[in-house]
Every structure is written in structure tokens, then in C-alpha cells.
Image (cartoon, rainbow over all chains, first blue to last red; front, side, top):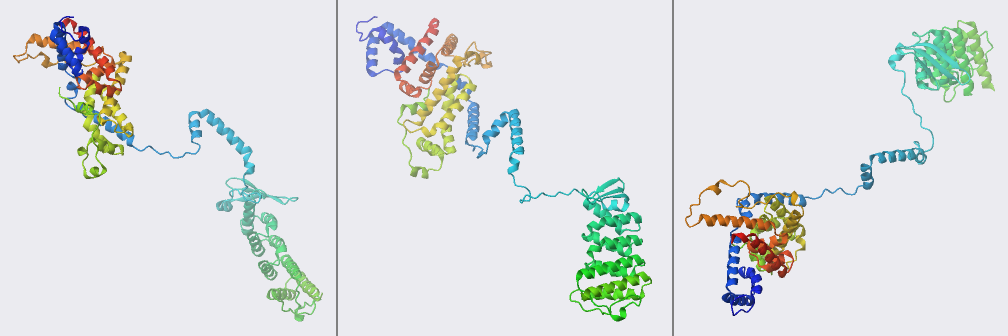
Length: 361
Length: 225
């Protein structure tokens, strides 16, 4: 402390000199310091040093002057900020509501546990929940599933039937075929294929042995209700070269004699078949059909065979199938008179008589 | 040293008068809008208004960051972090102070955070770059060229460089707050009260920080006097 007119002490002034130099003191403090400095040389020297320090500080080159003068750094900063703002301004991808999102996240993080859980769920659903599911048809009936046919058109043309076996108790049929690949067909597993083979054999008499054809006609008897099978039997009855086969075919059509096509075939057999046994069988079936129909036209007296006692009745008009019945009666009458085989003539006369008797009843 | 716009802004914390909606409708160019109108536009979601605010003040922000951090990469981080904070929190700005003050507060706080992190882990930090620091790496070609100004005394010039080097070294010993206060006072030219506002502290605290910083520098320069 020096000087006489000090308003404040030197130790009070010293801390204020920093702020005195940078003008951060009040006017009252400045007045007191000025008064003290005027009387205190030590504090004036300290103020001078403080001024020199301030001057040195002010002359300090700034880092900003070195890096920022070119403006490159500022441009970089602006670009980086713009990119960041673009990222912030970009709309977030709206994933929306994801059902079972937490499950999927859980599964993604735990693949092994997920696999085990899925297997367990699958086992439970497979064993328990399946009974609650509706059945295919909705009424509980089983759905029939047919396997693809094993018989191709080409197979039919190249095959040979090596054996046909009948299981009498249950009517099961087994066909053994020799084709490019030998195969065995059974009626309970390959019913469509069996029927197709039988029909093909019966319809192609020139390719197959008569014995095979006979067996096939016998096998088709059970399928006479099928239109294709019936057509094959009708063709066999008319065209097969072997009379036994034709006879068998006519016999197979016994229950279908009321069908016009069958009746026409019987009439053809009656009038044109060269075998008397076939003709007789045709008469039997036609009579049976007439009896089943219940409408017996009378035979014409002139149609009576001299050898046979035939009632003197003429064919009558019958409502419905009248024309067919008249054809039958005329055919029978014609056979009675002109057939080369006496037994056929007798059987025809007996048929007319039988029909007449039924008509009288 | 010329006063930056920070000084002018922080000297008037009351902020500037804002433009009305009618004024906004008549002003079509964003650079012509005053600060308040620009801030209002930016708060309404205008990216262009925000970018105009950035362009107005980012040079000063970068300069402050460079002087405080002494490393351009750190200054870039401060720049981006500060303006992103402004962008995210602009809706909270209520015009209770000027936008300058608010921005300055954010920048200084970001700088303080960076300096504190650097101080906490000095081993992870690259050395600071100080202009004209004599012991700092190979000198530039122009450093070896003869000074032709006859008024300059070579001895004085050398002494000045030594002083600056010591000041730079002393600056590294300052605490983050002391460094910020010192920078803002001596190189930004702010009043202590404004510095206190920017740092969210009292003028007295800022005063103490500046006093401690000056004493450290003076002790560093002790032998040169």
C-alpha cells in the first residue's frame, strides 16, 4: 500500500484491475480505482502489466481465422447439417399395425424356440383341432377319390388278356393283362379300367380268343346297366363270330330285354342269327319281355305253325309299345313258319301260344 | 476486434419486434424477414425459414466453436449438434429472449459438454491446434520469410510470438467454463452479464471464472515480464 489518498486499499484494487481493463466495473468502482491509481504507483504498474496482458491476449491469432477464412469448413458444416435435416424431415416408414408383431419379433430372436413352438402347435392342431373342422361334403359322407386310369388307349390296342379270374362269392373280377408292362386289374380297385378292358375285348372279337371273349361277356353281365357295357354286349350279340359268345351276350342282356335297343337286337338275332340256339334264346328273352310288359297281343290265325298248337289270335294294337310288340309277334310268326330249324319253329310257336295264353288270362 | 452479431444481439436481450401475419404476407423473400418472423415461420414448420436462420448465424457459431475447441473436426460436431438441438427444440422457444441469445446459449453449452468430455478423457483427444504456436509442428514457409516492415522490431516480434505461445499453453490449463468465459469475453466481446445468461449462471460466477483464467495466464507469462 502506498499513497496517501486511497479510498480503497491496494489488495482491494488488484482483483478489480482485470475488470477495470475490460470495462466490467461500475462507475463508482471506476472512480474509486482512478482515485487510488492516481496516488499508488504499484497499482499503476500492475495496471500496466494487466494492459500488456490484455493486449497480448487480443493479439492472439484465433483458430477460427486459420480454418474458417476460406469458408470451406463452413460449407462442409452446412452440407452435413442439411443432410441431417433431410433425414429428420423424411417421413418415417409407417409399418402400420402388424398382427402378432411381438410374436414375430420374439420368433426372430429365438429361432430354435420358435421351431419347437411351431412343431408343438402343429401337433396339437393336427391331433385335436382337426375334429372340429367341417368334412368335405358337409353331410358327413366320404369323398370318393379315383386314381388315375392305368389303361391308356394305346395300351388297349397292344394288350393281351392272359387271364380272367372270377371270385364267385363277392363277384370280384381280376384281369391279368400282358402289355408293355404286365398288370393285374381288380374290379374293386380298378373298376373303371376293368370295365374298359372288358368292353374293348367284347367289342373287338377279331383280336381276342373266343374263350377270353366269353369270359369277358360273363364279366360284363354285372355291368349291363352301364350304357357302354350294354352297347358292347349288343354288338357282341349281333356281330361276334362265335355263336357261344353271341348266346352269352344275349343271355347277359336278359334283364334288359325291355330296353328298346336290346329288344331290337333280340329281334335281329331272332331273324338273322345263323345259329338256332341263339335264335331260340332270342325267342325266350322276347317272350319274357312280353310277359314282363303284361300286354300280349293275339296271334293271327294264319300265322299259326301247322306243327304247333297256336291260338288263333291276331296281333292287336297295344297302346305305347304297340308297334314293337307287333314287330315281335310278326317276327315270331314268321320264324314259326319259315325258320330252317324245326326246333326254332316249335319254340316260336310255343312262344306265340304262351303269349296268347297270358293275354287270355 | 470487430464485434460480431452475437454481441449486438446479446446486448439487447429483449429481442426484436416481430412481424405480424400481415407483414409476413407482404414479405415474400425470407432473407428480408426479421428474426422474429423467421423464427415464427420455422416454428410453423418451414424448412426454408430454419435454413435462413442457420445461414444468418452459423458463421458466428462455427467461429466460436473453432476458437473454443481448437480443432475443426470438433467444431463441426459442435456446429451440427447445436443446430440440431435448435431444430428439435425450436417449438419451445417462447421469445422470452432474442433468438441470438437462445442460440448462443445452446452453442456454448454444447461446447462446454465437448470440452468436459475432452477433459475427462484426454488420452482420446488429438492435440489442439494453435496458430503461430512456435513449438507446434513444422512451420509454414512464410514463417521463415523476413519481415519487411521496418517499424517492427525483430526482438519484439519474437517476444510477441513467445507470449502468444505461452498464452495458448495456458489456455489449455483452463477449465471448460473458464475457457468459454475467456473466449466469450476477449474474442467475442460479450459483457459478463450476457455471458452469464448464455451459460445459465450468474454474473458473479462468470466474473470469478474470468478472474481465475486471467490469473492462470498471468502466472504462465511470469518470466517474460
